[in-house]
Each structure stands twice: as C-alpha cells, then as structure tokens.
Length: 80
Image (tube, helix red, strand yellow):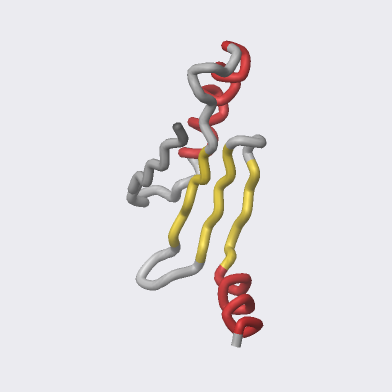
C-alpha cells in the first residue's frame, strides 16, 4: 500500500527545479490544472547582508516558474 502511494506521488511529479539552496520549484500533475509549489527557506534577520541579497535576487526567478494564469497561495511557517 505504501509503495502504491509513493508511485502515485512520484508519478505526479512534472518538474523539480532547485533554484538555490533556499528555493525550490516543484510542479505536480493535478486536475483540473497542475499545481506549482515554491518551497522557500528564507534568511532570518540574523543572516549576513550578502545572503539576504542573494535570496531576494533568486526569488523572482522562482516566481517566474509559475505558469501564466496560475494562482498563488501562501503558507507561512515561522521559526522562533
């Protein structure tokens, strides 16, 4: 049963594109349309400026991977 679930998930994977160590774009086959996820691990305020600048330079590249007419939803998880 677990193997079947894994096959289903793997079979739904359309695209996996790591943008950087902090950003990854995943596209899954779904109905009525595919789902594009952007996994983000953003720098904290304790990060050095160079790291923060790099993250914010890479972010638009990840957002461009969402197909035209796609919708965006945000899920925020904060670490304290």
